[in-house]
Amino acid sequence: MPYGPHTPADRARMLAAIGIDSVDELFQDIPAKLRASRLDLPGPVPELALAARLQDLAGRNRVDLASFLGAGVYRHYSPAAIDQLLLRGEWYTAYTPYQPEISQGTLQSIYEYQSLIAELVGLDVVSASHYDGAAATAEAALMTCRATRRERVLVSRAVHRHYRETMATYFLGGGLDVDAIALVADGPAAGTTDLAALERLLADPDRPVAGVVAGQPNFLGLLEPMAEIGRLAHGAGALFVAVVEPVSLAVLSPPGAYGADIAAGEGQPLGISPQYGGPYLGILAATDSLVRQIPGRLVGLTTDLDGKRAFVMTMRAREQDIRREKAASNICTNQALLALAASIYLATLGPHGLRDVAALGAARAAELEAALAEVGATRLHPGPYLNEFAVEVPDAPTVHRRLLDRGILAGLVLAEAEPDDPTLADALLVCATEVTTSDEIARFADALSGVLRGRPPIAVEAGAGALAGESAGAIPELSR
Amino acid sequence: MVPSDLRYTKDHEWVRLDGANATVGITEYAANQLGDIVFVELPEVGRTLSQAGVFGVVESVKAVSDLFAPLSGPVVEANEALAGKPELVNSDPYGDGWMVRVTVSEKAEVDALLDAAAYEALIAEG
Image 1 (cartoon, one colour):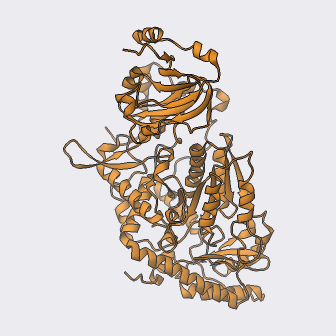
Image 2 (tube, one colour; image 1 turned 30 degrees about the vertical axis):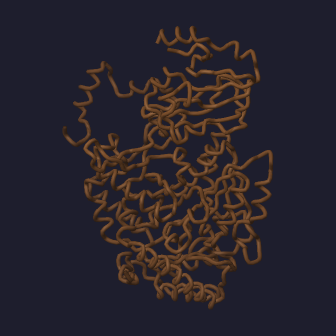
Image 3 (tube, chains in turn yellow, red; image 1 turned 180 degrees about the vertical axis):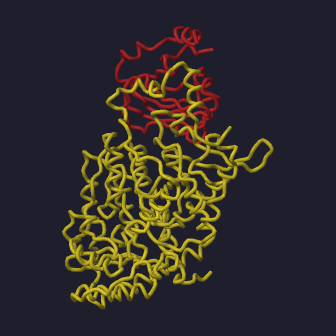
């Protein structure tokens, strides 16, 4: 079979074989007004012209910036082995195969991913992965409703806004409710989930709660009292969902240790480069008692007829292809290639390497905090953080824009992410990881000092000696 | 052979009346049709079933089927043994493979159930 599109002659033969005149006739059952009208695409261009056009578009990307942006997606050193291995033909598909057991290697890679993540989060069962952290979190929330037969989920306001919005979208059709838990406004716990507010929401006898969702670290970078949140949730008969950042689990308590029933999170920090819109990797794990509620594929280990080790798709009766409309979700696929990237990342670094990554990030962030404080930008919240925190600056959107002119991507303007929260009106959410250099931190502090004191920017020569690839030389060596 | 002292539904559940309570399970015919049963999800004690409503799920190696309540009423007991040994539904469908015990709340619903002869005729039709 030729590996290319059908020729007009091929199409004519196929149409003749089924006795119709045009491909459009195949779609006549769809009402005309629902069919796409003509797609207004530009005509074909020569390959060289197309390459030049894409080069031009790519050239508009700012690759010269010192970036302190995190907010759910983090820059990390990615061992070269990852990209090299992902390109192998044996792996190069986003999907679990339709006749899965014939692809033992693919199933084994997914099994290894599940095993590594299970160790990281301290829970029994890990799905073969989901689209991204937001989707995994929304699925986790749905699991709590199925398991408890209740219809209301509470989510901390310090869970990423995109995740909360995705949850609301997933809940829309099912008649399920999501209520936000307020954050502590001031004092030592400012910026973390308000436990008193949580208790009040849990106490409503007419609206029993299926699950409580909180992030660790939370969206503002702060550490939450997870054990206490879980205790309150369980006291009301609700399940507890922890939204986690996987690298942090090398140094923080895993969800299994503080009583979480489900862990969800974005797997991008595990060897997947930050890229606009993904594809990313949704991590979803649960206790053994919830195995029939976990959506998506699960790979299991068994023995074949000859007693040899074999990998299988397991618990398939939860899935759409068998259980139809009663399935645990509409997911019958996963992010196999990106799960493999995460597995290679974790296997390459090992537990000590991952701990170094997390610890170096925390050390860089402490260095950043001190440098920014020295020029007058102090932290907004007093509580402990790992590698991301909010800093107060007057007129944050303007400061952010002026820093961009000086070659600094000063994190996220919190007022744009959380416009309804007045406490975040004048703040930037900044982060550091092991790839953040002392030089970048010094440049940030210096530029911020200039902006705050109204000094004009020094012209930044974009493109000259500042290509993304060269920053690789500045990566701190990881001790092994 | 279909036990003559039980009542049945078209959905292949059986009912054993015992004073105010009724024990519910699935028939041997249903268990054979499903094949090896690997998981049974049952309602918690105290939940009130309504006749013909879904009260649980039975999962075999080849299919997942809903369990339909033959009678309305609160669940007074669920067969805990099935959590660890779902295969009891295959090996002893009318005995140790029972599923729930409910308090009968509508006597008329009992009268409307099939008797053994009617159920036997139903499965003979296939």
